[in-house]
Image (cartoon, rainbow, N blue to C red; front, top):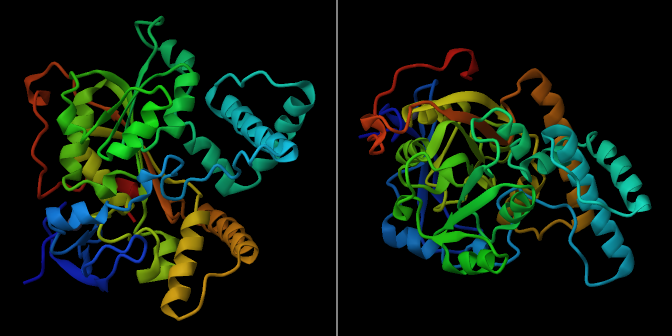
Length: 391
Ligand SMILES: [Zn+2]
């Protein structure tokens, strides 16, 4: 019998049999199925990994490193080891990111010396020509507008808006958001990541979101950046986010796109598969359905333009299987940049063909209503609210 889609209940087809954990080497073989319903198309591991599999799969996971970055995320440049020129370039890069975030989201850049400030400003405009780097800069502010812009539209203009990042890892972005004026909280189930985040003076709680007992309607914004694909019950997780958001509060979701060009090209070598940690992989209509079933109202569903690190990891995985070594850094970087350009061109024709999905949704139910007191059970059979965004 064909396994059923965990989101819509339709039969699934075997898409990639016998997948291994090539990234972190956990032992096992997994099979990725795809929902046969075209208005869903969710990818899911069937049968789902056991709790023991999942525990083992996280033993050497990337959040254990204090300097880790989530999938596809890159700062573009690290601080170097005290070398003056490298430090200057590093500061320019950060300055450029802040200038871009100021223009797009209304944040105030940190004061910098005149030369550094001028060059940062020029660099920030040049970066807008590079679709992937531009998206990195936006993702580094979680696509959220500055608190002062948000406060202007709320009834309590003096309070610092509350931001929660679920699966915040070592808290690199959360720390910057705190400096930008948000009151920040994070969660992560990885104790080493939690310790690293706390060393940045962040309020980060250990464990799953459900284990935290946050009060209803606590947050103005919640971010799930490359988290939803890891969660065993994604609709229940989204419903809980809806419950924890103030009415009208924003949920930001970033997750790999199974219906994107990256998977089309790399197939079983695609970085977004990441068995067995990615329990399900969304498509645009599947993500929309999951958000709606979680009680949220979808404001925007798009793809971001970031492919570089996914491209390089997928290329290396393919070469490894073919018995070749990793491609040297420079050609690999150049190819990855070209890939982002190519994807940017393709996204002009089809905005949902990108490698990474971005959804912005708002909490739609008043949290005080009894219906919102407990997260609703995920619905197996969904309506078809997909409209023009289905693909
Ligand atoms: Zn389905």
